[in-house]
Structure formats: structure tokens, C-alpha cells
Length: 635
Image 1 (tube, helix red, strand yellow):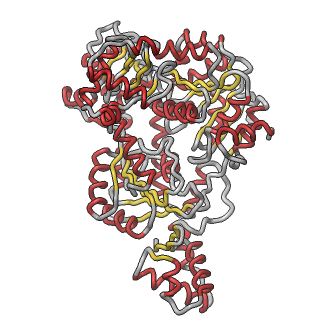
Image 2: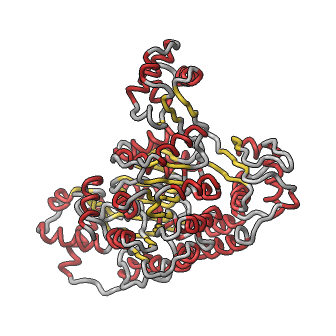
């Protein structure tokens, strides 16, 4: 590891040393090798390309699928005074032009782009003009047809390899089976597989538990009442986030719902309250977690089962990032096996249904035959389903398959947050003649946001309204007035997704759905669902070892803490009478009061502090109790 890399880490991130695996990946990248990094959630993937980006000459190109994730990463880098921008389909023409000017001026170190951009002749021409030193493929499992989130647009990355010969590629993913890893190397045209680095998927501080129950709500409340600390409850529907958050609140446990349908300001508010500890539990869909870095989550509960072990591992892995003992609890009802099976049907509706959705989509958005190429339309899926009396889940799946087949891009987080840029110089602003409200809003914006003269910045109309003592409607109208006066360039947010037609409309009979998009992905999903069923319902060994084997690792020994290992331990010979007595005393006290402070536990027994502490350690090792600071709780 070069001294320069350590100094860069210390200067921009304040850390004195790298985490495991980070050094190996950075060394490989700086040596110019094509590299794959497999690092579980919370392992610190971003550092592995951001540090080299600051050391290497020129620009690092990062291909990533989510516009919202690009925005978060760019904002975080700018906060560290690292020049970064994002190019994606969601930018206005003027925003795109401003970003290109920054790139060509040589002021940018990291460029984020969506894989769809690589289809553009103009973008490829831009890449040839720029000095690209490294290509990073984030969420690299998306390039593999065997991956759980295959995206055909990722196959465009081979274009970047062709356009930028000799530029090394770093592929990163948080969860991939050996088959997917091999496919990633093949699709990205790696010369060798000599530089694949894995951070073990074994989380020593995480206990995987399964609880079979008829009444999931009551079991959820029971677990959160017994185990102290911050928690996430994962569900698979927006409606259920609201229902369970209300139930927990009624039980005196502070909880809030989180899902993709919330407006950005509400998402940010709820996320911040949870991060600060004001809210203890977030009940969320899988929209919650990407880019969320809270180290002290003590328990993650899966109320609904995810459809794959990859997703389960990523979501469960958001517990215990600080290295302290934490729980991943899966609640299972008898009906869950059938629910998993039905997910396959919902995800892959009949081909005729999909083709019919394509035609209805074109009719709904007024796209005629042989028309619509490069047309961008706002899309309200609720109104669409109501108009044509469609099942929302199957419709959403059909639209995704149409997108994967190359007919459209489905931009779910297109303009989820408003943004502005000042369009005149400071002297012109001083002489601007606008209404009182517009003047108030302009002054509030200038006090609240920086960098507005050089680039577009994300804004919140509700925050501006609060600071300016105006209503959100008044702020919106003031921003439109300022835009008409050419004082600002304003891109309002929209709560609806957008659909970009990447080719002209074809007749329904000519819609082609490739085998790789439908049959191959359906077979792959079926295998993942069967693996999830086996893990949840038929585990005949240590759960940690089952996960490790799934991800291609060879387990050394059972974890000793999962529900399977606990059952096995109970069948072993009893410990000595003295040890058993101390452990039984602790169990007895925790049976009456849990959680309890260690000091109170000691004073509540007639044993020595050393005996109690020894018993507590053994019970924690066995996974019978959880320790949070100086507090103990029965699990």
C-alpha cells in the first residue's frame, strides 16, 4: 500500500488505516489490473475507488444504476471538497451542458454515469476526449444474467472497454455467487481472474434467528420490547409499512414508515430522525438502506421474506456495522412459502400480457405507431392501472421487462428533488425587479445554499417555505417568477416516474422479448426463490454456514449462535454445576426483568461479580442474551 493512499485517506476521510480487503483492492487498481471486489454491505466499497480516483491522473468513470444513489455519492464527495458530477437521463438540457463544461475544463475527478449513457454517440465521443484513468462498475452483479438484478443496459459497459482501451476496470458488488462473479469477469472482458478479492461474508457479531409464528405482529412487538437499540423492520409493501409503524407506536415504541412513494423531504426527515435516535424503528420496504450508514442498528427483522438470499443478506447486514452483537430475525408464517412461489408468477407475467401492456402504455402516453423515439413522458402508474383495470404488481413487472427488452427506460427516481442554478451574475441579481415574495425566496436561497452560481444544487421548497415564512405554494410560484425573469434555472420535482422511449413504437405483434430477459431470468429467479425457501423452511445446518456456502465460501465451523446451533447446543451435555448455577441465576433474573443494567443484575443475585460476568459472557456467546453497552436483554 502506497504512503500516498494512506495520506489521501487521512486527508479526506480522517481515517488512519484501511478496512480489511480495501488495501488489496486499491493496490490492484493502482497497479492497473482489472479487479473484482466482493464486499458485503457496510464493508466500505466506495473507498476502494474514491481513494485511487484522487491519486490517478484524469477522471474516474463510475457506472451505477440509481439516480438517487449517484446524487447521494456526489453530495458526500462535494462535502469532502472532492470534485464530482453525475450524468444521467434525468438531467435537463442546460444541466447537462453545465456538467459537460465542468468535465472538459478538467475540474472534475469522479464522473458518475448511468449505463444507458453509454448508448449515446455524444457521450462516447466525450469519453474519448477526456482523460479516463479508471472505470468503476458499481452493483456489478447487474451485468450478469445469473444475478438477482440483471439489467441489459449494463451490457453497454463493454462499449466503454472498447472506447477506452487499456483503462482498467474495477467491478464492485455486495453479494454475488461464484457463477455471477465468473460471469462479471466474462462480460467485462477481463484478461485474467487473478485479481478477485473477497471480504468474508461471515459477520461474527450477527446472530441469524428464525421464528415460526402465526401472529407476526405480536412476535415483532415482543422482540423489540426485549431487545434494546435501533431497529429496522423490512416488509414488501408500502401499505404494511404504515400498518406496522402504527402498531409499534401504539405499543409505545417510536416507529415511522419509509417507502419509495414518500416525497423526498419526508424521506429525509424520517431518515434523519432515525439516525439521531429520535425514532427507534423504521418499518421499510427495500427502498430503505441503499447508502444508509448507521453503525449501531441492533436488530433487523424481516417481517416478510425477500425473494433471494442476496437481498436477505444485504438487508440483514445493516445490523451491527459497529461490530457489536446484533440480531437478524426472520419471522415466518405457514403461508410464506406460497407467497414466495407467487412472487415468481407476479415477476414474470405471460408474454401476451407484457406485449399488451406495451400497447396500452403507448396509448396512455399518446405515442403513435413509428413515433416516440427519444420522447420523455411523465407516468402515473396508479392512474394507468385504474384506467385499464390492471393488477399493479404484474403491471410493474411487465413494464420492467419491456424496459429490459430495450423499448423504454423506466426512470422511477427521475426528478424526485427540485434543483436550481443562478442564471445571472451578482450585479444583475442586485438590480433585479421582482415581487416581494420572489425577492424573499431569492434571498433565502442565497443564504441557504452554496455553489449556485457555478452548478445546479438540490433544494427543498418546504425548507425554503419554513425559513421564508411562506407557504410551499407561494415558494413554488416565486421560483417560477424568478425563472421567467431568467434569474434562475429551475427544475421542479415530480412525484411520478418518467418513461423514456428508446425506440419508436412498434406494433404489438413485433414486440420482441429476448430469452435472456424472460426465460433465463425467470429460471434464475426460480433457483433463488428455492434457495430462500430452503434457508427459511428446511435448514439442516448452521445458518451462517448455509449463507457462506451459497456465496462460495468454505465454512470452518458452525457459528454457535443461530437458531439451528442453539438447538444443537441444548442437546449437548450440561456444564459443571457451578457454571450452570451462575448461568441459571442470570436466566432467572432476566426472566423477571429484561432489559436490565449489568450493575443491577449483579446486585440482584447472591453470587460474586466475577461469577455473574463469566455467566453473562457465556450466555452471550451462546446467543441467549444481547448486550448493548451496559444493558443486557434476553433474546
